[in-house]
Length: 448
Image (cartoon, rainbow, N blue to C red):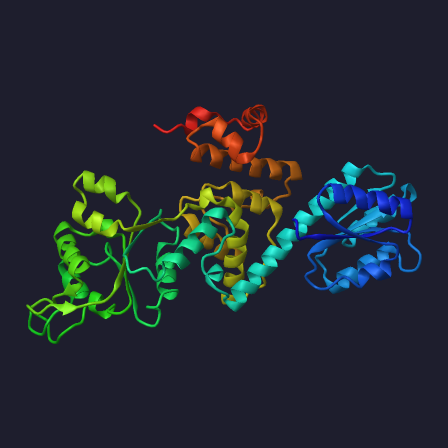
């Protein structure tokens, strides 16, 4: 929030100076004004900050300022400062869109706490607005690989760094984490982008026609081969070949694929003439190929040939902070596709989404967003049930999110409370208290 600003309007010079000092000492950027008209001149659509204003001012009142601010940007938080006699009026003003109100006299701590909450709210609103803009205008890799978590930022950086590297790439990720999307980004941001990107699901093509489909064949090479067919590998010449679920490839076919990777030539069925191919191979697997090669379920020579550049895609449960942005993206897309009004997302629903374990990862979240846009229930997971859409107290929503974050860190740390304490920046005593509060124990997350 270091780049966020606070516009403080107060006609009492001593109160204005004290409030500005309290905000400044909290590390916040504040500009103070004695009149509302001067502050209003600073407001533009998308203003990165909040407004704190006294209600009773000479000239334009605080309520008039709030109305004028919301005419420019309806989602910009305005905090009202009132005297004791104005509290009923301030409550009514909140119904009209005020973010919060503070009654005089107030402490520095109270002012800073309310302003920080408002700044966080504003930051999230601006992030969602920026996301919508990226989605609508398709700006860069951020519009394809969504998410502001450290894991996704690192992944995007790696993809851009590696896009033009000549080496093949191996992508690991659970079902639904977006392995093909990552492969497409590697192709799109490379110098091969104007050539073919050929995607092949190794588990979806029957073994008896795999060679013909992938390596191609000559006319008359087998019954029914009426004409020459260029295979997938040859079609990818100059571009990229994506081999999804490579772990499902039969052993005899792994041998033939290995030769293509090593020599960069392909022979069509019925031909003895090697055809040179210039391509980048991107393979993907949802299992550990090293373990499979140790168990002789996958050729070790093929594994070591593929294991040059490895990208690991994080499951959604390990980047929960991306869920609101992803859900917003999928909801916008579904509403546009089905010509529906974008439905609001109530707090209880977002709480359920944040707490869910997401075994189907991003694909599962997209399906939930599609159903929500259509007004349908979510099925067995119950995320869109009437119960989950009923009002839930704020404390319960915060608690649900806090529990999910602690669970996630315990899982990542293998149950080590010390590591979780460091990762979350909370004392161990506090962490133990919260674990007891939410019924969590470190033993259930320890690695076997």
